[in-house]
Length: 150
Image 1 (cartoon, rainbow, N blue to C red):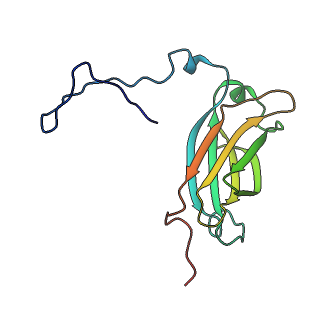
Image 2 (tube, rainbow, N blue to C red):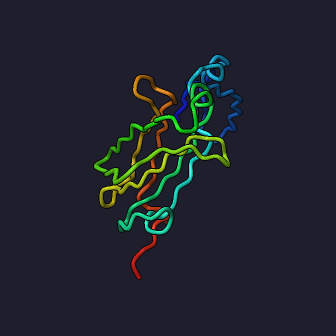
């Protein structure tokens, strides 16, 4: 997120500049939408969390709740539309209802291109409708989540 502005009064080097601002995103109608939203995002090493057996891969778990998702049967056919940018690869993905959190859980195993950030987007849907907002995630390449070979 980036914000910029031009002050009413010209600034001078060495003089303090006091700035007050409010940052607003969206409006109160967003929370009243009938579409699901992300409750939790978890990221781990794809070789240790949830399996995968893919060196350099990450396991991402995203819980979605609300809107039309809350009205779905726990056995409904909810699927995900997952895509990777920046030359990354989605190795596997699946959706299931998670009873303890009462959320629809999307599990993704993905691998970034070498020395590049992992960029992912996903949303939930059924055969006819989009059921959730689009989740967008960027994981920098210089993180310490994935185990390095010893």
